[in-house]
Length: 299
Image 1: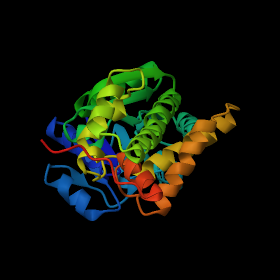
Image 2: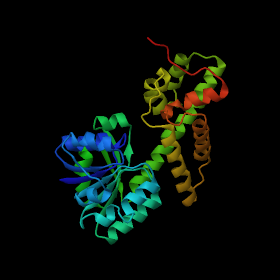
Image 3: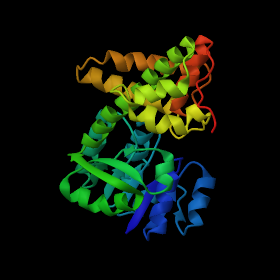
Image 4: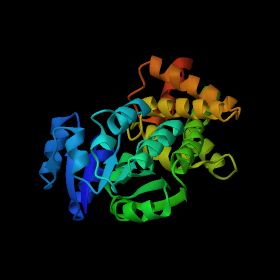
């Protein structure tokens, strides 16, 4: 299958690489020429423009940072929809505003082009291994078209419903994933202030309903061992919380905890933690409070 792939950042690059390794014929585009060159080593063809990548694919994949960029790259005058083949399918894996997804899907339909939203669950390390999770919004026939690509890039695929349902499911998921980081940060900062032993505190929490996946699975391998190199940054988590609050406002659903978490992430960004892994919210809060950072003792 011929695939146009636009957006070779920390998530897009390994996903495109996995497609190349599994026999898909890729034409790739990114603002970073080094990322394009890396894919060319895997026999992808580099494209100098979005239009060139779009025209080359039966499926055109976009993996981009935010709603405004997706709107321009997909819907702009020199964008994907203006140059994609009739009958092709756009597969947008970005995490963006649901209303942007809906608008682009309508524009695609008017041009005889399919549109699928398939934002990604899990981290960049999972993308490296081809173990991403996808939340897919698509008409059944378009889902079947993109399924082989998703299977090549990931290990778990959920067809959540029609176009737009993937993006909305991602926002629900990320609200819990990101907000739990703030609650965990506050709990461990309080534990540190009380002078409690971190290992004992975690042992207690792991045995009660207070436990969550971030605290039990993710944090012991990241911030609690001193590793805050980004898998998913505080900046990106803040972006997602903003999408969540704005989408909830549009749907008239009050989400005061999401709004409070967003402001906590704003504080972390203001103190220089924006580029760190989102588990570093623990460090950011301890920095604000003047508390020693929580760290597990090395065995």
